[in-house]
Length: 278
Picture 1 (cartoon, helix red, strand yellow):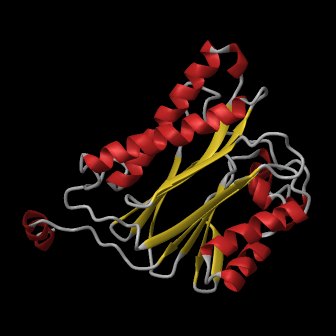
Picture 2: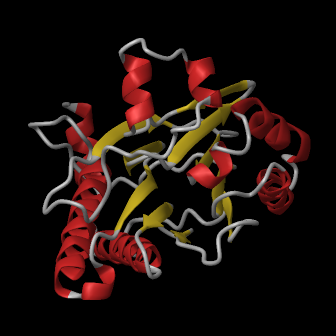
């Protein structure tokens, strides 16, 4: 692992995925690597369980590629063109690669034709988090008492909100929530939205599929974390239960990450000298 330190004790995490009460199969996939601080959630779509294939490819590809970059110690530096730190570039490129693999698979295997998946992923490094997403799987942050959605859905409904046809409150009650305007595997290339945020000790990040957010309002997600925040497993189980109690019309997935302690990157002597003159 070189000079990178494991984040397992500094960012505590739990993940749950549930078929729900209506669907026969679970086409969501989740994964995380506590050592490198990577968290990934994908919500697949497509007939004959092809959505399960798409989300599985997405999660596996992203985790493997980010691990490779981590082991190769490629997390340092800033891209001069975009201003993004290396973790954001690595995450973006891994998702782009997953898109290519899913698209090629859908073209070569008849049973996978037309499959796709949304994805949301977070990578912690050096007291920051890189956040990348495609589609309407979301990430929220709870910082102290402020609970906010960090991702903006790539969906027809969100476009209508942006253009003033719906208010956010009306959108919460709308029935046409699931028409995504971006997904992995649909086209040969995909536009991955990437952002970076500073991290504070005590922050909560919530990655979730629309099986949760279509059933449970943001205020209730916030209340659940605030009420059961002493135990991550309990928070996760309660959120899944709330979605099922509200109808469970889709697969429900949630990954929770709580920052217990900050995690500055280890600096070599040369890095520190360069920082003095930066």
